[in-house]
Picture 1 (cartoon, helix red, strand yellow):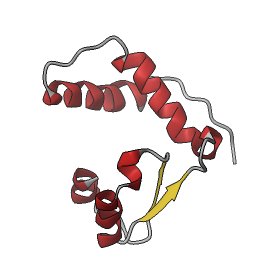
Picture 2 (cartoon, helix red, strand yellow; picture 1 turned 30 degrees about the horizontal axis):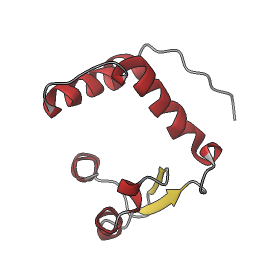
Picture 3 (cartoon, rainbow, N blue to C red; picture 1 turned 120 degrees about the vertical axis):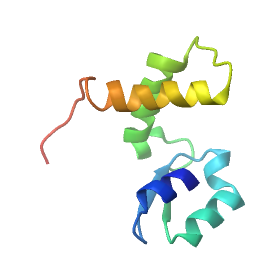
Picture 4 (cartoon, rainbow, N blue to C red; picture 1 turned 135 degrees about the horizontal axis):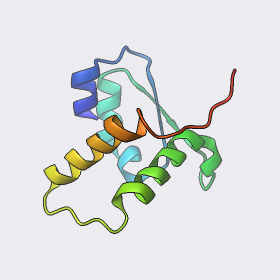
Length: 100
């Protein structure tokens, strides 16, 4: 979150959607968001459909990159994930969408 705030400089009031994971509900994480006036939005307990977009992305990331992969160091994982997101997921992977 710190890296995203530093690089993206989100405007106050940005809504940050997450699941109910321990990281996102921790006091430190919530303080960090509050300091930059970001608004947390969590799915309801046990309802993955509340945050279907994020759930879909993380499912793709896990199934297409992470499962079965062993990263020797954190930087190797970071490089692989950034490469997946920027080089494949956002640019080449087919996405379903509907007109609004």
